[in-house]
Image 1 (cartoon, rainbow, N blue to C red):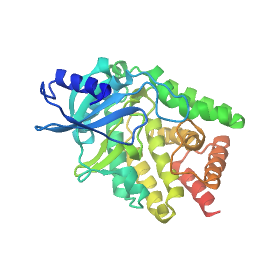
Image 2 (cartoon, rainbow, N blue to C red):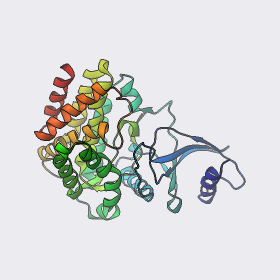
Image 3 (tube, rainbow, N blue to C red):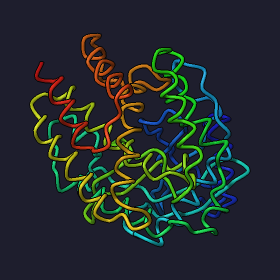
Length: 334
């Protein structure tokens, strides 16, 4: 056992999750750039432990406060009261150590949505279920002053979302920098609902009772359009990576957007859609030229297609998500 894992085990003993004198088996789990995650096995139980990193595992110098770990725990607690099956079960939290323990979701029962999509198994019903659970969490927390106080995490959200995505991309594209910086400012000042902040297929597992959201360390009380745009963005990008599944991915985009917008109660649905449509091209461009580019787009010609589409939409913003999908389809057919 390394010094690092010994420290983790000591915290688990203190939380009562590992017996004193017991040496658990810790297996590192892959997929995260912002945290260390281990599968923990003892003779009595199996669970996960997650610890936030101060410096994220990306090529760029990207640092973030480790106290975001506490907001992730709070998001699981809040969302779990609204849609219990949408989150893993929390087992313990050590805020000073920046770690918490949660139930282990067996891959035999819980399919990683990202893996399903990249394998060409895009199912509109899965996307609709994601949209349904996400909008229920947003609607239940809308304009809730108590939730707003609990998730007053503006500085963290700026550090791990607005700056590395929109603002870093603005520096890479000076001619659309004004539009990207305004998107960052507009998102920052819109405070309506509890936002997950990282609704990506890599953080969603499709289980026996529907989708389960993971990795909520970007949790923030702010603009729900960020969550919707962030997720839809990945369906657009994967249509480029998996040509054989383009129609299914397009149908999934429509199913997610339609289901979500049908559940909007805190403002006119058209206003929410317009804000999402303005934000989406900025996030689209960020996944090739921001601090966290998607790893499955490596061909420069593919990246140019994303840039061409995103920059055109930043110059002439759409107000309907269907128009963005149509614009992207035209690019893919060109």
